[in-house]
Length: 391
Ligand code: NAD
Ligand code: MG
Image (cartoon, rainbow, N blue to C red; front, top):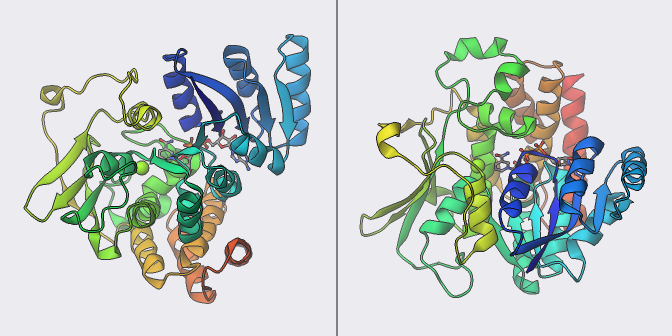
């Protein structure tokens, strides 16, 4: 029986993870569920899964959850605050930590899991984008296991040669490059001059995947793919030139590895996050995920085209930040989080997201990633700058 802490249980990845876990009560037991402030959803999850601990970051939400659980005579202990997130991620009893908090907020508890040598199922790509070098060092020096849940990285992971316990050390294994696939988001068929007028409602309506709001907007701008390029750089130790992006509108091929002998290995499946979640949970074995089997005849065709930077300037900005190195990617991530939140609140236009990130990247000089404090300081400065450009 593996004991699991699920960070971000009330979100899209969290709910998909619980769906897979519920199919295998003989294999997994939940120790802790954690989220920000969605009391009603977390209460229902506590009823169903009876975790030992539930964390609500927000203290008022934690109080109302505790009250509801008491009335329902459910003995789950309720904790609150950032330290509680770290505690449930590093608790001695826990084997697996699913990192599914959105944004920079997920960094510290995910790092706590790395320091405690957990099996980390990483959905929270922002943690790696902010602190890749430090994060990978903590994983390796503490003997943690990092399993990618992001569908592209999970696909690459599945197509890599197995080397020992972990697959991500593959310096000289004949890999030419990896190819991350991108659906192109809801505006892929729009003319560039039409992008100014798109609304948050249109941006979060992804054609192939059902996801949280922030990552849905990131998919529409393709910053999501940019963050994934950076994520792949750290996860698999690849240079920027070895990471390509191709548009693939059906989202059936989740990514590919191109080998020097001309072989290209692809991982395919219906677009449903329960596949990479189940893969990471069971690795190196396989378990049922509940995902509909792929019927290629029904799919009919797979299309590919070039990702055009003039349509997706955020993708170019992410490559530039990776090239610049140091805390540039943390600055990129912070400016993006602020700009996306402002777009969702109708303070800026869709096309201004990239403009604000670009302004922050050119106004702020990046630092060498010496320690976590430096990363967090540059993240904070980038947020202030982005906010000042919005107001
Ligand atoms: P979501 O918005 O649906 O859910 C976010 C979760 O994080 C919620 O449970 C929320 O309560 C929690 N949360 C937010 N802020 C928090 C805080 N400060 N402290 C504690 N908990 C907090 O997001 P999602 O779509 O599930 O995405 C989660 C992460 O997974 C993101 O990093 C995203 O990039 C990544 N991801 C998502 C998908 C997907 O299909 N949804 C695919 C690949 C990667
Ligand atoms: Mg992805």
